[in-house]
Amino acid sequence: MEIILSTAIGILAASGIWLLLRPRTFQVIVGLCLLSYAVNLFIFSMGRLTLSAAPIMPKGGFIDSTAYADPLPQALVLTAIVISFATTALFLVVMIAARGLTGTDHVDGRERDG
Image (cartoon, rainbow, N blue to C red; front, side):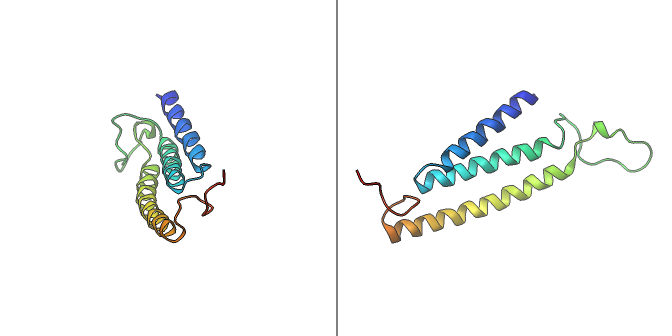
């Protein structure tokens, strides 16, 4: 399970970085999304990979903490998903405005010559 998750995180991060280096603004936005997905999976995996484990521990007595999942990474990822959705929407609006002003979707504002 860990090797599959780490491979998925690596592929998402590598694809996101590759797309960030592309010359078109839409590719850059998709690269930022993929990179944020990779970071979210990484943060989520820090809360231990457990199946059918509750994130909340009951009160009282001795508690075996290995039987429970850590709720903090889950809360952080949920917050990150909401923030990344809002920033992606903002980036798309800025991209459309820049396309209207410059007439191109290149990140530097002009097409390559030749």
